[in-house]
Amino acid sequence: MDKHKMVAMAERIYRDVSGAMATGLAHLGAESGLFTAMSGRGTMSLAMVIEASGLQPRYVEEWLYGMVCAGYLDYDPEAGTYALPEEHAYLLSSVGTDHYMGGMFGMPPPLLAQAPRLLQAMRDGGGVPFGDFAPACRHAIDVMNRGNYDNRLADYWLAQLPEVVARLQAGGRVLDVGCGHGHAAIALAKGFPASEIVGVDPDAASIAEARAAAAAAGTPGIRFVHATLDGIPEQPGYDLITIFDSLHDLPDPVAVLQQVRARLAPDGVLFVIELKVADRLEENRTPIGTMFYGFSMFHCMTQSLAHDGAGLGACMGPAKTTALFTAAGFARVEQLSIKSPTNLFYAVRA
Image (cartoon, rainbow, N blue to C red; front, side):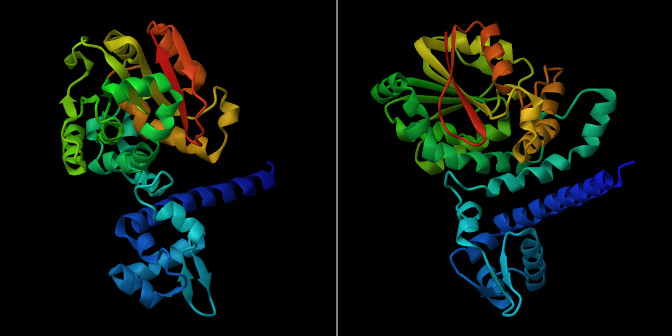
């Protein structure tokens, strides 16, 4: 046995468990407002952080210690002060922007809570349906994506499809499939106020959240439908249909894509976002790849298998994704040149 390899593996295990604990601490920092309380304040004593956050002193103290050890905070041992660097605050306290990463910390807790059921499914088959995940999971998904929808969807992403933009500016029809909490639909309604926007999702709790979000955003004209695509008439067709980060979750993605194709207007476009992974496993041996496979195992794949579905998982890659479009009868598939560290973008036409 190679002792050096064994030691290296032990160190990796420590790092991985450390990362899990750092994620938990960072999640507390994001949700409690601690990162926000420290943002832009420079060096702070323990008492200053406690006062700024309004939280219980002993919890704040232990959180600071953990975040220093994880490298999230700077620490001056002589002065006994803490600081959230500007560069870190840019990612940790910028809620609502397209560069906020705090929502990612909210995913592991509700996902790992399903470990007992995943173990049972690994032995007996089946899985965990979407509705059985805690509301915190829906919240984390919403927070992870909302800033991108608000700041990039209408102005940047869809700019790659100028013919679609022209139709929506003139008053087109949009269908967001798997709309979740509705923020993609809300962003489209704000960007294209002349267009008719419809969101559809089979999860009742998500639809309720979407309707509330639309009312709060001042876009009550969006129609959110609690249904599968069977509940959406084929005619009149839609100029734009979107499926954002959910195609891989579906029990029968080809059947859904066929339903989508039947609902596209002439010259309409299906705009799909999927996770940015390579077709070859060896190219996904990165921290992002590990994270995506974890999300897939604990959430995406299992919810499909819970319905005896395909269980494709989140890490399909371009080849498998394109094959789904082809199998559904689409004639043209274009992978768009949109820069993103985490997403791939497809424009699909009948």
